Image (cartoon, rainbow, N blue to C red; front, top):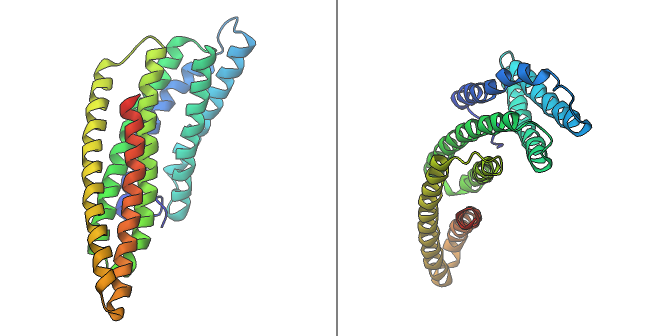
Length: 250
């Protein structure tokens, strides 16, 4: 099941969250649509790219209000991808110093708001899937873990984006010290929790290996399924831990 295929309650909440996050772009579009006076070719090109992607985000956000079912899920997916495209435009403009600093600062602050909303949404979805996993039979747990793994991949990307937002602000000479401190605390907390999960799952996996070695043949299939589940959980947590370590050491 895809991250974007969700029960009705999730769907309504995710729509509201995305509309809230992306509505921030709408206020920027009018200001950005006015061409800068005596702009250089590089500035004109960068501004055109920024306005184009922001306009596409605005149009998708408007479409989200009037669509339902699978089509709405597809639009949500396109919005996430379109925001990644926007981040690339912003990053290139910052690196090339090809847009007015004030415009770039405003864009990065919008990204900060969006990234925080996305993390909160994905954290809640991870909790929902964990509850479903805990209530499921062993034979169903691997497919649920695939969904959980996808959510964690998006979360890892969201944490990367939070770090990048702070780096962009420093490069624009407006560091957000409060946000930097809060992010460091959050990453440290997640590092401790993720490390503890890995230690716990590793202990369980070792105990299962010993149990499988001495178990009757009739019992091994069920134990091996449990072992596969633990290996998948370890793989997901280890991937997240590696990402967190990189963020903590940057």
